[in-house]
Image (cartoon, rainbow, N blue to C red; front, side, top):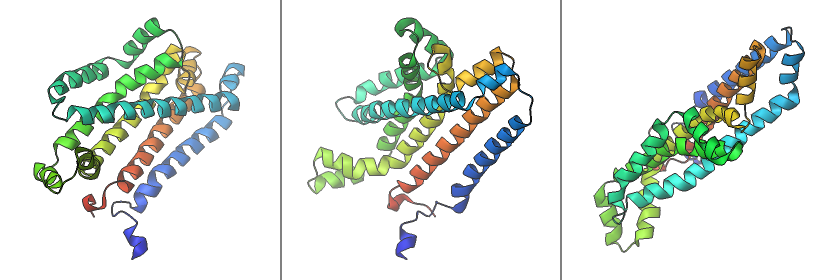
Length: 252
């Protein structure tokens, strides 16, 4: 019984197995296909282990760093905008976040490159701007959806405003906040492929090289790895969403 209590009801074997198995099969099938395809010197150079490993690591690093900054910006900002002192500013801030996501990612990156120059810094800022909205809006929605009587009850037993926030409001808002984080992570994987156009590296280098040099194997590998990374990130975020959900909110 103790072991069962530690396992959330929504954590099924399908969630643990299907996505990783599909990713392994897809990447394995692509590797097998590449091993049987004739590659000229340009394709072989683009598909060297060192280049592919570097591109994949750059992509993971772009996603991890951008997501970290999205979290430390969007969650505190979402909390602040639901407090009485800043509540009136929430429509303006939300509108600005909407503008950031409504702007085409490539156009936004181009503007940042013009302003900040070529490099990972421009790519990271563009990815962060593009992914802030889901986390910000979900944080605000999660906090606003809490029953006011629960907050009043917490205040009534003498909890400080910080205690009410950390022990009542945030735990109840966790499911919606985690859903926003999951959306932002998947967005970041896709947007990070565009970093290649600003000199930021990543798997976009393989995709761009495959298109520019008209080498289909290079394009296919870059695309498959991007999709595989997005699926694995979504899978990990889904597990975190299930495991971090407060027990009282679990659904069988």
